[in-house]
Image 1 (cartoon, rainbow, N blue to C red):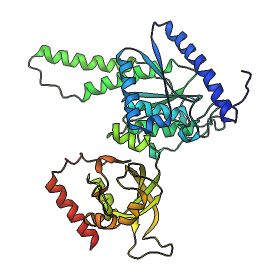
Image 2 (cartoon, rainbow, N blue to C red; image 1 turned 120 degrees about the vertical axis):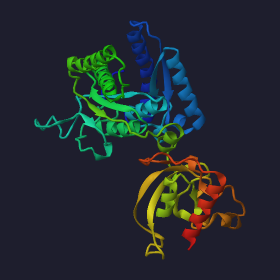
Image 3 (cartoon, rainbow, N blue to C red; image 1 turned 90 degrees about the vertical axis):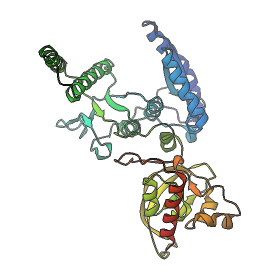
Image 4 (cartoon, helix red, strand yellow; image 1 turned 180 degrees about the horizontal axis):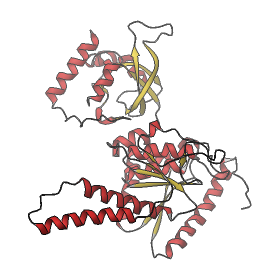
Length: 394
């Protein structure tokens, strides 16, 4: 279409996207036809992810296609999307899709081999970062920007890796000009995993010399397989979270755009970590204009005994700990904040719920390292609720 750079006007972008989608799918179809591999196309916008029913429909469709042996080509529906409902880049879309289908691996292809501690183009002594266990502690150069025709650079890939690994997906950054790297890396990781499992699994005591010899031979074979395996192409591998956030909880955290914030005290945070719902007595402040069942940010702050110069009953920057779907609108929460559940109906004239947000509608960024607390029975939950409200109201 004789377009040398990315257009600035939305209508032009969407028109080019409509043209490009046809050519892109034609190219994919032509490539996979050599392998006699059927493919399909799925176009999504942020609205499709934000709506729970459409999210589940998209998930079911992709899973059914995979069951049928059909490869789905997922892309953003650029012909309809506007700024408010765009993912912004394909890296984010790929991470959400990988989490949606519980993928084992997510490959983010770029113009460099891997992440480096410094920009390798300007620093010849830059060292590669081959494995990242805690993405929050990463110290890497992300100055690589997206192309003039596309979106997304190394920074967006870090964000996508954070999303995907939180859902339990191993995420890999490697060079796009060598697509064969994908197969080599997967084979290497599978061989490593097989060897690790063979070493860590507890073997029963052999009952005979023959069985003992067979056990030793099996372990030796696995070890030789690792030794013979060629060194994988240079890449950066982000390890999945040990306690992944999936399905509805992932959707609440990353599928919805927050419309405001609810500020809570330390006691309410402790209750949430103990798998309790969010009570009005633990709410310190509210921000934004949101309705019932809309997503909000949950922010922990230090509570003041008296209002400060700014009129607020809290201080400090606050720490966002997660997201929630609330049972009350912003003006309603502003009226019931700091009050016990029994006071909600006198204050509002009605009480849709004793909770500002139910526990199943709250998703936290960081999971506890301990096992999940068992679901409480009604009597035990009532006792804990009464105890917490009593402590806060003293």
